[in-house]
Image (cartoon, rainbow, N blue to C red; front, side, top):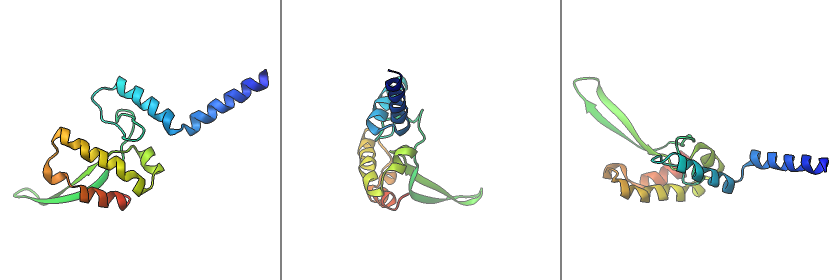
Amino acid sequence: MKNITILLLLITALIILIEPLPLRQIRGYYHQSMNPGYGHCYRCLEPWSNAKGHYTQYAEYKFTDEPYSGIRKYSVGCFSLCERCWSELTPRKRLPYYKKLYDDWDDIKVTPEHKDWNLIEKAVLEGK
């Protein structure tokens, strides 16, 4: 009996350490219910209040800020995956999650100059 208990504890510990994606998705869904209003990782469903998003810069714009300091730059990017999920996937496998985010932007009326699928796709496939 003692050996079975130890074995079950070891298996449980291993599952927690490995933490397969379906288990992370259940946890993410639960955390979303506890953090309404937050966006989330499109893969593991963990809300941004609990996970760090991987920022993918896909554009950079320059503008003149005269008479202050001349030319300034600002970057445009997005995050559809948390750092953990991003690191577990190849660029090609990340692409559907970015496409889903891009499609969801219609609901929040993203500025057209910032919503450019070709730039996003290029950045994702470059591994940014």
